[in-house]
Amino acid sequence: MEMRWNLDVLYPSLDSPELKQDLGEMGRQIGEFQVWTREQLTSTEDAVSKMEQYITKLTEILKKQYRIYAFAELTASVDARNEKALQLAERVLEQSVELVEPDVLFIKWLGQLSDLDAQIDQSSLLQEHRFYLNEKAEKNRYLLSEKEEIILAKMKNTGSNAWTKLHEMITSTLLVDIVIDGEAKQLPLPVVRNMAFEKDPELRKNAYEAELSAYKKIDESAAAALNGIKGEVITETKLRGYESALAKTLGDSRMDRETLDAMLQAMRESLPSFHRYYRKKGELLGHVSGLPFYDMFAPVGEADMRYSYKEARDFIVKHFASFSEKLSNYAAKAFDNQWIDAEIRDGKRGGAFCYNLPFLKESRIMANFSGSYYDVSTLAHELGHGYHGECLGEEAFLNTDYPMPIAETASILCESIVAKAALKEATPEQAFAILENDISGAGQVIVDIYSRFLFESELFRRREEGSLSVKELNEIMLQAQKDAYGDGLDHSALHHYMWVCKPHYYSALYNFYNFPYAFGLLFAKGLYAEYLKRGDDFVAQYDQLLAVTGKKSVADVAAIMGVDVRSVDFWRNSLGLIEKDIETFLELADQRGSQV
Image (cartoon, rainbow, N blue to C red; front, top):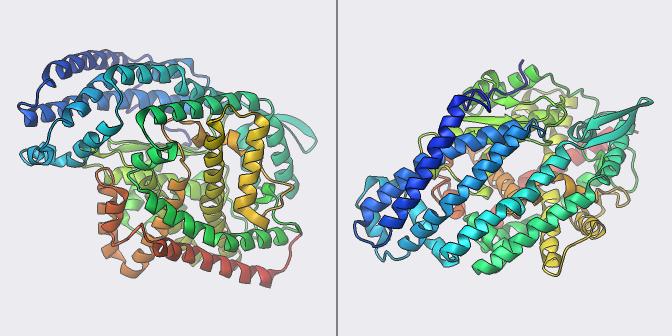
């Protein structure tokens, strides 16, 4: 099967006439849009008509901009040295600054309307965009002057956006020096990181040590990027009047602090169960002082959980069908139509992501597939993101932008579907491996995410006082891992460079991109439990939930399914499902004894 995606539906090439035409047309439309907003948004007369025109004009521009930028970003993500793609992405970002002035003028203009909801009621187009308009009006509280907003947006391209690109470049092109079977090699970082899933214990440890050593080549550059990005965020949030970067993130996430605190409380309460799991896994692998970080993803049991890419495709498509034909058909379409780039190669970004293309009703998924069950689970996760986009297919373009916490719901539910369905037909050895993999994944989303939340909280606190050194960043990361993992891990074998390899820290737009994963997992676990109770009736309502995620708050989206996300008990109940799996794992592990 083809393991590289096809982007022809966007543009044939970076030099294509179609791309050049769209670039020119977009520039013209933006110029006309700037003139229109300056001339028309000077009074509140004909407010309904002006709002309709604004939405129509903006949507047309954003669709074109999104298309061009997606092509550039997707191309560069698998070829970090592609200068044309990088330059195109930079050009689009620079041009997007020209939309800041119209946005500011519109938000300030909306703030003058005392009867916004009554105006919205007069138009079906405005009613469709009610949430968007009200959210824009609310942002008036945190808006700077028109001139300041434009300056700030322009400075980002040579500030945080440039630091983000630097981090992506140095991690995408980093080659790790490693000796395998007596042969010295230089391998891409994703290849070496994926060795954490290999059965050979010496290879796992060797890869871990080589990885940590390799980061020394880029740690000063990564620290400079991180300091630059977080410093800019602190400055901007203060200028806008936010209490903190976290407060701004919660606002952007359409989530309140009460919900976050309830979830974090339940997560902290659950940590001892995860610590028991890690200690037991360590014992199975022959360790006496807790699980070393390099064995975090080690396979357990005798089952050979290896897959070819085609086997992974068939496995996912088959088990998605146990949930719904619509989900299964979507996955088959993504694999068969070359929407996925799964091949590991030099210059390609590490990790995995899904890039939805709502204007085309398609998506593109990047992964680094090496054949482990974890890789299969990762593909299922990213396909969940793609399915979320599929369910948004009939929504207006401006209603397809959903917040971070909800973003992980469909992806993690898809992981659960694959894991639970696979358990039904697995051999005892395979079932044990699948169960362990599922708990391991949950541990990443609960325990490791909690460590990342602690790290980023402390990072922001200290960055207020000045830039942090590599040594300080390492120390904060180690402490965060100790606080989250407790005695579950061997404290002499942690991962102090985790701040370098996680791209989520290197975005000025998405700070604290950690707790949304925990929200997604636990919300999805709760929803999956409902699915098991209700069956097919649940599926249609679930698709409806995904379809409205771009035009409701997190609490209101959850309320569709009768869930109160501000209640600690909801989160405890979801975590209870994972804790039951851990108890099952511990019982099975005790029956198996140690495997050195």
